[in-house]
Amino acid sequence: MNIEWVYYLVVIAVSAFVSFISIPSILFVARERHLYDDLHSHRKEHDHGIPRLGGVAIFCSFTIVSLLFAKYDSVLPTNVLLTSCIILFAVGLKDDLAGSGPGTKFFMQFLVGTILVLMGDVRLTSLYGVFDVQSIPFYLSVPVSIIIIMFIVNAFNLIDGIDGLAGTIGLIVNLTFAVLFIHMGQIELAALAFSMVGAIIGFLYYNYTPAKIFMGDTGSLLIGLISVVLAIKFIELNKFTAANYAPTFYSAPATAVAVIIIPLFDTFRVFFLRVIKKQSPFKADRNHIHHRILKLGFTHLQGTFALALTNLLFIYVALTLRSWGNFGLIFMFFGICIVINWGTTVLIRIKERKGFKVGYFFG
Image (cartoon, rainbow, N blue to C red; front, side):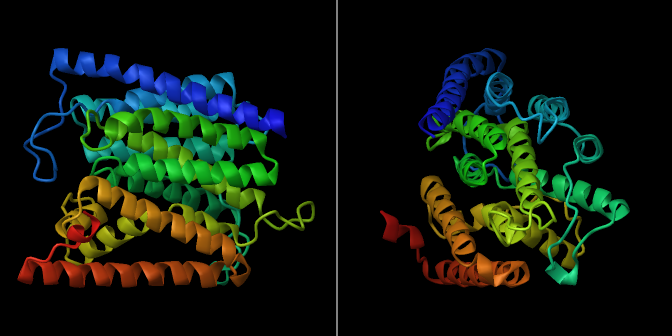
């Protein structure tokens, strides 16, 4: 066990080191080539150009370390996962440097989802009684799994709106899955998650306020991809079968939902609001959860830590109350999210009327 923990620490340390030392070179190239974030977008929160190529460091660090240390072929084909990562890296880099149309991005995400599901067998085969559904036939499992992969990948992309948020949430998600996989004896998947943990740690040093660099689509798409792959593997490895009649974690789908609840609920919420307003669900706006927190008077750092703490509380509740079952827990999680969202709306209206700032209570 001691050797195992040393192994994990080495994975994290090497990954963080590679990411950390890569970013100064990326910043230098960005300054020389004037590769800055778009200042003219109404959704930007900064008044000066900041490079959005931090995802390059995250990708290089994660790829190098996972190839060196994370031997996960027995549970997930290495060639399939890295091929998917490279495709999303190319799509994200193109978008960060020159922009790309939504049609191209969604097609490539669909391609990545298809590769993972059909060639890597990264798919859900059961809903564990949620909506009274148990096993899912193959012909339904494939499209459902592809949609879930695409949705979560985009969800992480959409929460990348304030300094440190996407990186911190990605850190919590991957670190949580790493610890859960350790308890399950899945050393390979734990090492894979720790590879991403280290890459994000090295990046966050430069991304917390005042941010020197953003991760861009290159980073957020990759973090979303690894997070959803780990979530699906966590659920499937805790499925009741004749060979696995006593899984390590009960209510695994509900636990996975709790781990990724921040990007998951935020994306559900903005998509729903856009649809009922008869707008495209993919139309950009300033109605995400991080935008609403800034309206309350929080700083970027306060907003990031508030959402991170909320995420950790959901994970704690899921692990503590996992005997409740999947349907009950998931229903409760989304109910709590709706209440929090309603409370946020009330506070925003109070602030707009009276100049009240919640952020004052936090210094």
